Amino acid sequence: MPSNPIPRLSPPAGVRSDLGAVPVLEYPNTSPPEPSGPRYSANVALTCERGHAPGQVLHALQELRGVIDDRLRQDLGSRYDRHSAQSVGTDKLTVTFTLRAASHAEAIRSAGLAAGTLAELLTHHAAAVDLSSIALVVRAQ
Image (tube, one colour):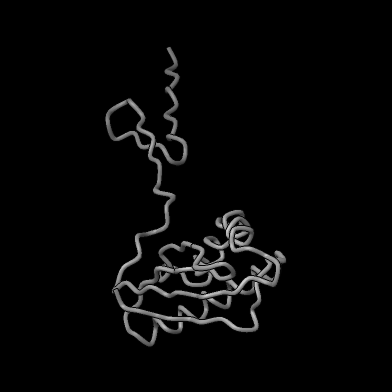
């Protein structure tokens, strides 16, 4: 009687079968790696255009939150941790970036790049901010 071998199937990609015949799904971590190195804060002070309250600009920043995060992760990689924004008066607001850097010089370079990226995105999305005068303060935490 001819023997018909039973074909052995390989598990699909992403499935481990090291527990006998029971496949175990592996879910790779899709989060970016935790930033490492000393932490710095980079505060960007912005002035709203005449006739625009900070609340309107904060709303625009909230809508752009994902775009800003994605772009800064692309531009800065593991040096970028997060950002936040808040009103600081009747016509001003600050955006604070939390950055990681191996040196003060690298932190300053990263802060400048983050501020430039923010200015580019705000301009592209027509946010009501006056970019002719900003302040950038970088501090080790």
